[in-house]
Image (cartoon, rainbow, N blue to C red):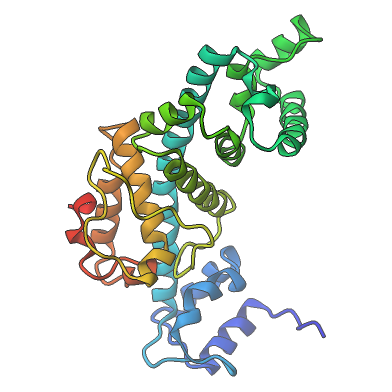
Length: 298
């Protein structure tokens, strides 16, 4: 049976009846008119004292929930910057190494991939993306070369992070170029990079859809143990909670950015954000157990 729709005033009344407090109740309608009740619910879920009748713990303030929402939004914007840098670097290195070794249209060479059924399906999807694109260089290619496959440096520009990650993962493991791409991204083994790209693609989709990172378990996790990492990495034990929260993926983003854009400001921006919200319980994101003593976070 569907629940009835509530007006903003009804939503405020419901929250108050469950024990939520308001420092400025007159300002609350503005937030509920522009950030849905259901979206904010993800930021107060852990503040409930009882999850059947949804009563709140003592001293639970609506404004603190909004602060959590804004903190999470700012963090996602910072992380999207990191994902963009990594995605562009990955695309560049794949195009460079594979085009030099196997020609400009390597992405359709079935001999290079472990799963040919997968390649046939994704090649169709990739060509559909290419056909829909209105980028000038793609429009020119379709006009001037209508019966030829586009070179990888054209078609891979419309490939998503997820597609790039899957193409890399499905390259045959004995290709020297697969190892070269991993090393170019700062890792020693292709299985390390494949694991990290899959996790980064997952968090990218969360960010791109404006979804919540706060207090969320990550379905995809990057490989933790690295063989001879070439830069600062996690040098202290991290527990299961830290591994399943965003902390591990965020750390991997910083590691890769250290390699592909050494002068990046991602870590500084994250630490500045933490400083702007000194009472924010960042352990909900996995930042616990002396996280700031980890080598990569110093």
